[in-house]
Length: 144
Image (tube, rainbow, N blue to C red; front, side):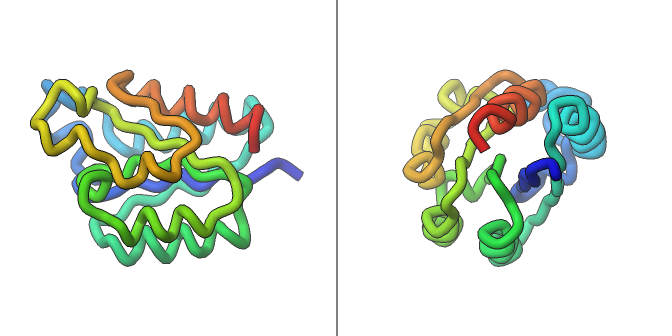
């Protein structure tokens, strides 16, 4: 049976493709989900792709992943810089965690330089657009 990888997406990513396309590109979150599902099948993984604008929902899914998943790929979006709750939940997850950001957060506002999530992440992919999700999945195939 193939390993399950949770791919979690935080606030405003539901507007991917519409919100600031000069920063995030024109692909939608549905496009990202489709490309991840196709790649996961090719490399022997399964994915559960989720998005929420609510911090508590992401925490609940991370708790759920403790029972079901071999790894977590997370784009916490704005919660990257604010959420100790997401960090604490990730600390309770035993598998690999990869943090993904579509934009290069270090070229943006200075408050984006700090990531709570990075304190638990095994790797961070920043600024490679939606391709970062595929790179994270390929890595999960090796480590999860």
